[in-house]
Image (cartoon, rainbow, N blue to C red; front, side, top):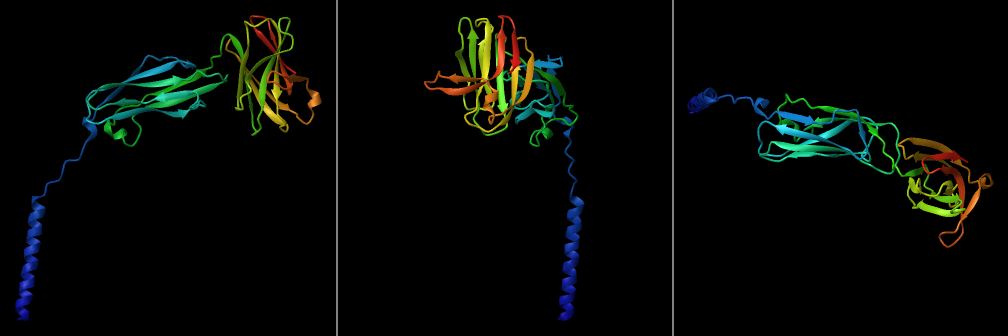
Length: 282
């Protein structure tokens, strides 16, 4: 009986081995998936310069040589430069299913903040993990690099105040012309923001002297940066220290335009001759 069971098990083992051998013999190796047939992509733009002014836009037209049944998103990925999301906005290009063309926009934002020496470098392409393998791997993504050209309002003096503390600091402007002698002129820089931006002094305003004053609201001494944007597009950066522990060092102008009397202290003198501004730090 034992001998019988032994032969029976041996026969079963041979049968299993034979079946496995037959199965192996009939299997076929699948063909390796190749990306060679994936769509090629062409990038074209009419931008050929090295500088982009605030308010301008670069348009990339993106074309594929064959359609896909799913969408692909092309982006501009920043790889260098000191411009940030406040300066440059990218609108990605979405290639919808069964289409062959789309557009990507690189927008240089025009703001009220005079800036100096910014630049931007980026790679254009389907760069995310979900998109990059949907196009042919022979596609060469273009790169773009340009300087950001600052644009100031050509009709007025832009004054931007920034500081590095949590204190509430404001700027107000005064007129001291023959038409408006020592008159509260502008409070556009008194908003509670940091930086504060004032654009109250225009070339078209009466010729004469104007002042830019700080309102420190009891804050301790602080370092500050004043950035001035002139109508001709030039920018001047002034770094200073406001010593609120020694207010006698400054000329006091009581601000009464808000119904009370609030101290403001002269920091800049602005001479307006109707065509240019001349600024002096006091």
